[in-house]
Image (cartoon, rainbow, N blue to C red; front, side, top):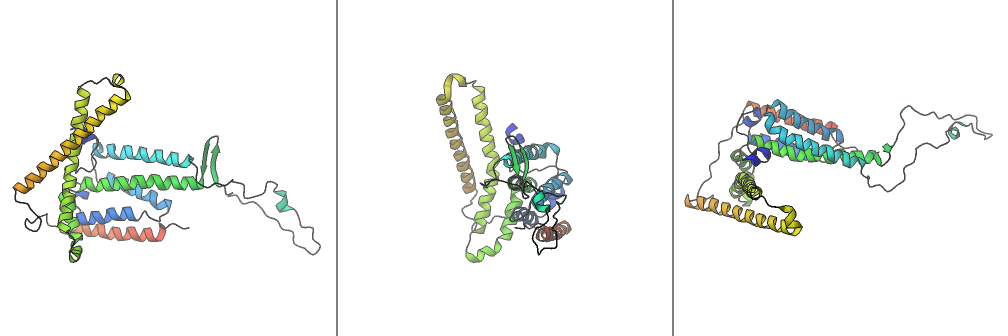
Length: 309
């Protein structure tokens, strides 16, 4: 199960039980949606703050280093690469940049020669000179807009992926299902099959480890055969991987059929006839504190995180 340990995406960490594990799944879901929605129309200060908050949550939750190092480490490297590439890329404005002040500064300090004018204007340069182009050395050219776009793109990559992964890491699939079903209860008035949707979500989360296991087994089977890829060439190698992909789809469909047969044998025909019982959800003191901090979170977002155009 090396692949499952090296790529723990969407997997639940059973041990150790951190304070994030003990929070109500509905509260954690509201925090997740807040991280994803507060990013919209926010300034770069708030976007960087979201990244720092996710890192602090991981550190103070005392999640084992072996778990989050493989996830956060590679994700930070990816985000940094996106930041660098986005900074040196063209900003999309097809204009020629020029200085705000004229080349000959004496024009601004020369006295007027008009007869009726008695006041001599003197314009002095301030210590803070504005420059649209921040770095211009050789082929490296960083402007204010390109840096702004790079920060925006790199932070959204980290926030979107890691916040979702941290939620799945500290919340069991059954808790996710029960929390979503509890929040979606008002939709029953519109004849929306809430239980079917949550059950499909649970089966999808449970199916992720099976997919990784099948991929791992097929990759190992290819490696143990010691195939000479140079001799096969590009066409032969593509044919081998096409056969492997076909075999992967067959195995996944077989696993899905086995899961469906197991549910049918146990008498599960529909959620209405076979009631799906999830765990009972209760809000505790820690959940109330998390909700209060969430309100403060949105207050700071509205006050200081809005993007000023």
